[in-house]
Image (cartoon, rainbow, N blue to C red; front, side, top):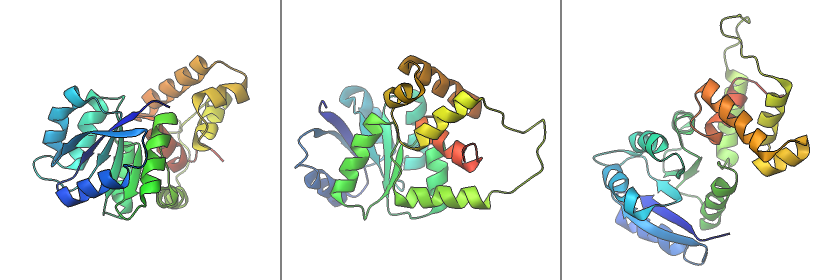
Length: 216
């Protein structure tokens, strides 16, 4: 894989430097931008052109939540991995549904940060045990209501299979091979589902599918 360009936004300089230093052994990861807040980060994106952003949430001027939403709209090809101290399910759901591709706690090992960076580049999202627990809890605690023609979500068998395989972390190419269709068809189905459900990216689509019990 080519060198992955990474940006980091965090208002604590010591933490930023620590993350950069801890990932230095991985020669396929190169940090191209440091920012103390979301505003500085967004202003630096055109010149730095990162592939991945490690995003803190609590920052001055522009926090990580607002910055993630802006970046998902203006720079949809940049992958955002939240890296925060907030172990709060509400933040996980909100960020993943609004453009984040992964959610890590600051207690994560450098090896997991590296894994998250690699996986969002390949699959478009990274789900660790913490995020999976949030998904599972949402799946079980979602309010059950009687089906209605106005709000019932109807998808085809092919669409359901694409979602199921996405949730199993298969890439578009792998899904195409399993379903015996072209990767372009898989991407078209995924894009159509994201547009229908208002998902910002693959991670948001996976969240929506699990939260609404679209897969068994």
